[in-house]
Amino acid sequence: VHGLINIYQAIAESCNVFFYHLGGGYGNFRGLGLDRLIKYFRLFGLGSFLGIDLPNEKNGFVPTIEWKKETKKEDWYIGDIYHLSIGQGDLTVTPLQMAIATAAIANNGVLWRPQIVDKIIDSEKNIIKEFAPQAIRKINEPLSVLAPSDSLRSAYIKKENFKIIQDAMRLTVTAGSAQSLKTLSVKVAGKTGTAQVNGDKKPDAWFTSFAPYENPTIVLTILVENGGEGSIIAVPIAKNVLEWYFNK
Figure 1: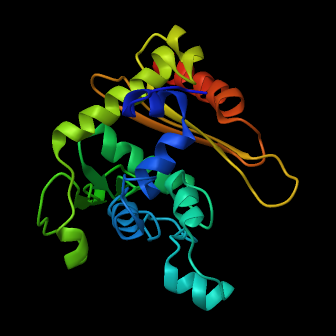
Figure 2: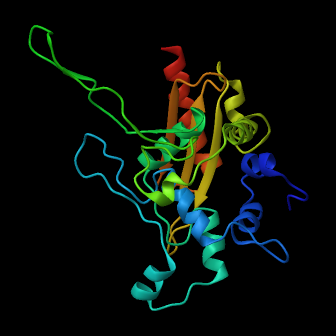
Figure 3: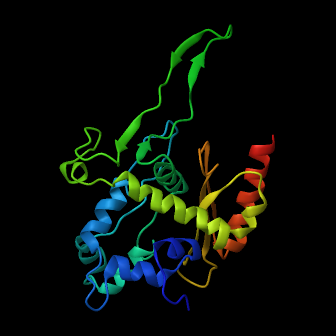
């Protein structure tokens, strides 16, 4: 359907087959494989608590061969890696995780801890305590002291590769699956997602974005459970929010 396609178009047009190939390989192309997929999922905060200052945070789930064997009593197949490569199968993520991962892409590689409280003041507006922003890890630096384990300290992404993904997410708006955002007063970059669920329910509609593209000040992630297509359902909601935010 898509024909010959590169990473920019694959993100902009949300091409599953490109990411099947990239993650699981095909023919003579080996692909990233399960271990590297898991390592980079975790590098971006998936499958772990981010430590937001609110109760009841969920950590999502990144499946492994051992987990499937123990829980489902099943072997791991190449199809499982293909599913994982497009964010489906047994992988679960929270909108908060998706927003923080998107922010790390937008800011060239720093995963920040989500934070609600900026400071505590008394009735006379005296500052009792301030809470400085905290970085969980720097994805753009090898051997980051902020990484929680040796496996993540050895994993990092070059800054020029963040630019590739930023440009691809911008192409999503200019020529891809979120073109309705072209009429906004600021340049937006984003990625649509349509995540299938069990049973006969509609898929979950996703859209994650940052703006302005040149110098981001906001990350916005939309999830409509059982909403349908991300480009049809989630993108218009994002448009309304971004329109309000930049015109208020």
